[in-house]
Length: 420
Ligand SMILES: Cc1ncc(COP(=O)(O)O)c(C=O)c1O
Image (cartoon, rainbow, N blue to C red; front, side):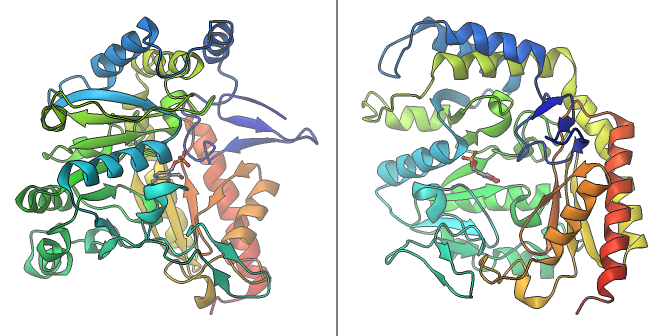
């Protein structure tokens, strides 16, 4: 019912540390006074649809490039959207249009959004967009398109590979040229499905995309705006994408919003052709006000450096947690984005479970127990927990989350014995 900073208040008066950041969106925390003020002020401005030119939109675009994309000279244009899902759908459709190719490529266990081509590019079994039966089984729409699939990178599953040793390279890239050849776009991200590709992986993938004439869209829905200790995940490596999709933190989670950023080269490819797409609420004044406020605060309060510093603390806390609990299989992440993979029963394994059945997965039971110890922690499928707290979180609040998880894991482990 209320919140402040990284805290969220329940109806019964209990106050929890919000380790979820509301799906990673609430980077400024809850009820940030400057965000409330900016959004309220914008709500009293005239209502403008995307088809009306607006100086407000131009200024917001300039500010996005000036603050978040500083030093990224390759970035050429931005189209505001209503969500990351929409930005990804728009980008993939644009790639199909420009290349005249239909196939899309994504890696296994990836999630990119809930509608359109963003949903079609998703490969995570759980968020497939269809119906899961409470008594078992699932159903999806006939003809539901599937992307071509890259394997989960070895470096993302907790192994030490970084694409430089031969085994690692062949696991990820032996089939990549064939997969990307004739495809319109490859979409990649850092973190969905608890997979964290290395910088070298990104550079290798970018190279294959370049060689095959396939556009590369980087999904920064979760990682954009500082969460990893850099403005965007692609900045961890040397290569640069053709398109970047933004959302979530883009408006601090306060109002819907997202954006698709295009490279100069892609803008040149479009040339003087008109891009025949419009949508009523894209670039809405309230969205723009939220975005510009978030940009200014992230810069002024040095939240990117803060995410980097606190990420080291959180990483250490979670590593300790993993060594203390037999039910933890691995932890992974960077900055203020981490996941804890649990030894769940096979039915709820990340690469299998579709959300069906009556029984509550292990991850849900741990997350419910964590609430009793003062922390709100998301599940990531049946076998994972996901931490993406506000960037304004305090160090002692991170400790509180780790302690709550420690207590919750102990409780569930004791209650249920060993995990099969
Ligand atoms: C990696 C990733 N990409 C894209 C999306 C889609 O974002 P939204 O649901 O805000 O459109 C999500 C949502 O969770 C996500 O985790």
